[in-house]
Image 1 (tube, helix red, strand yellow):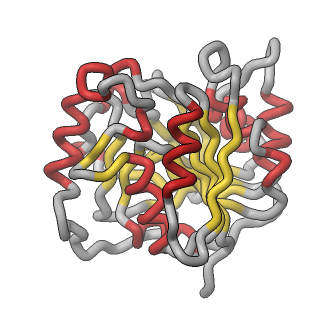
Image 2 (cartoon, rainbow, N blue to C red):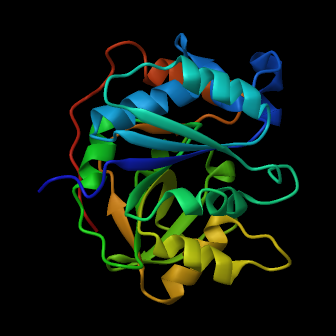
Length: 252
């Protein structure tokens, strides 16, 4: 089966306050992991999976993100940067809505600080997504999660995700920060907005209530959310040069 889409949306608006001791004032997506900015790892991994068009939502030091994007010269790859001036006061769902006018087809949704193996993205892109749906790549290897307290938890029932959030007391998987979405996600975010604000989890929770939010189990694949200096060091160990172990995937 061919890829569902060749478009990716990357959320890159945060300032990375917990990485300030290693960022040197850079925006979080430009903090280096093994010699490359985090966002460059994201772009290269997605590009290897078949993505050609990237929409990047910037916020903190958006000028630096634009300069980085302008310096990238990958044949056949398009990078467009949009700015979310509300990144400091609003949750990340608002960042998605700032890119709505640029996306009218299914898309891969990525976080600029969630490192992944390219085959994980490729496997997710081979899934069939129905109109109005979203599919989240989840990790069921709960014993291997680096910082469970900070992880976004997921509870599933059959193929569907029935709840998502950091504070769940009952869960059977963890959100990896990689989604295959349809434009219906934008509508869900708008409907989930309260007082001009909404998080990505708010929108996905609404889709779960409508049975339009499914899970994709990444199996033995590796990934890491880089939020702290400790997580950065862990990711550097996991994803050192040439580290791409063989993996398998299971669609739940």
